[in-house]
Length: 124
Image (cartoon, rainbow, N blue to C red; front, side, top):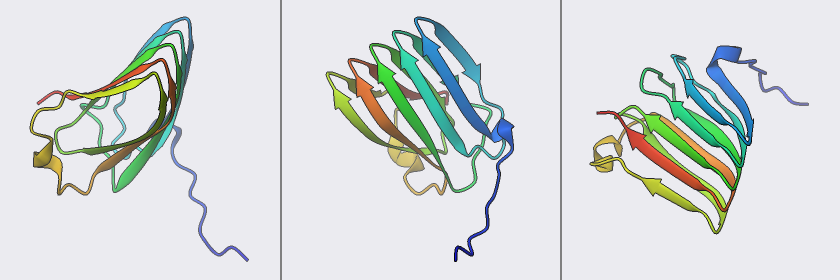
């Protein structure tokens, strides 16, 4: 038997976006971000987490093909990437990323990226 509790997160704490031949700009304001899934095919997505917060860790699952995604995170968030890449890149433009090395706020970016670009930056 499974005795683990099931927690259904508030929908404002999750992000689910699909972009096909289009652009999406989204500002996340959740104070308890849990994660989500983003599909981007021949499009661009910009996510701004500058005014958001998370407790512990959150997982952002990406499925990218021939597009780009830009993710702006707060200065006190750690970001780890675990993307399967084919002719793709992940560019981390945060300066002094070691300042957040001991932070307990972790955003994990995982998924698949084909001929796409992922940019991570902060607004400090």
